[in-house]
Image 1 (cartoon, one colour):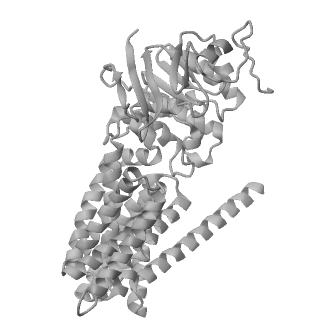
Image 2: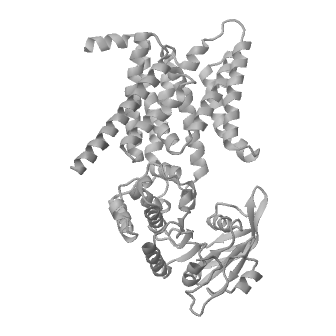
Image 3: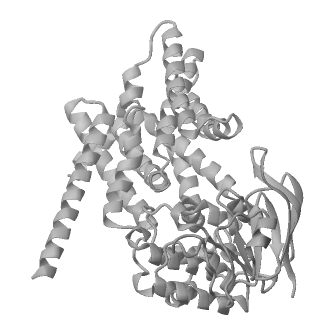
Length: 249
Length: 280
């Protein structure tokens, strides 16, 4: 198992307002890390740090060498942040996932289009490949963006709230797909849904101004409290899939 | 017919007007599609008006007003980002500031200029008669650079316009591209001032892509259709301008908005017919 990247005692934020302090995290091949934490705790900031979008004030992020032509990141942003009226088709969105490999002036040939159509099929939106993204439902849009994240077969897949708009049937599909993909790539997933996180990920990162790395997918409220990570969960049941939350669900 | 056309082209100003209309349509179609898709309309309006400051100063100093406008336009395009990031001003407020400050400087220096005061109206509302051969050459140079840039980097431009954050994760130099494209916006605006004028310019960038977007959702088709629509609109507007002796900016925008209304009507009828066909 090779290291993909490493955050070494990094502090990061915006305009000298530190959001995350003294963060350490190592990401290796085949990791499946769930990121949890309260809103405003710095989950998105952590992703931006990983993606190289924000430079740390202190410390550093080390990236380890990739194989030739390998794409480091597959990134699924929060769908809420996408401009839905932008004139772009589903096929073009998925093709844009090849940008890293193609370079700035790369041409897209019929092989790339076939690759994109195969990917659309895999995420179940091949019939709407020519539709503009504005005509899609939330679930279809999320599938499309998942296709974009996956098409280059990245070494590290980063998912920001992948289950926000997803219908129930796709949610099951999504997690089965992620388990499958995890054999080939590392995954980092941000989610509000504690049940999802604990039953699918291997390890948990609690983010609330600091980062506490928990090397298991079983986490108790005592541990969460000691991590200063006020997530609304009371306890695990005997089976890891049943997690109780103190919402009236 | 051929005789009439060749006769018309003997008048230098008519030939200039024709070439200006063609070249401006190409530049405005390309960059306007980007402006509309990326929602940079307000920024473009700000750049347009800020450039008037450069025109005023250039008049005062006895320089080429288009050169002055170009300097002001490019500086304000880049300045908005600097203002909003370094000086912590909100972006739309920064644009609003540059918008009117540019106009203020322009009027200030035009009024300070001794002797003959330039025809303000032609800068505000456009006057195709003022297009010079030098303007055509500058437009041609801008067109060559822009067409090459857009063909070479079409995918990168589209993907970064759609989702800058994702493009960044794939190694696209987002900042550099964004600056280059803002530079193109500024220069296209400045070189279009003679034809449509500062007050009316924004529609030249926004109406053609808006019409194209009614019929297609593909970015490359939007650019090509915008160029064609822009050219047709500009020609109709120029003919109206010559015939009725009205500033060309006004006639071109009226022609374009007429085309927009027709396009909307066609698409409305088309949708209705299709729906009826389905329900029968």
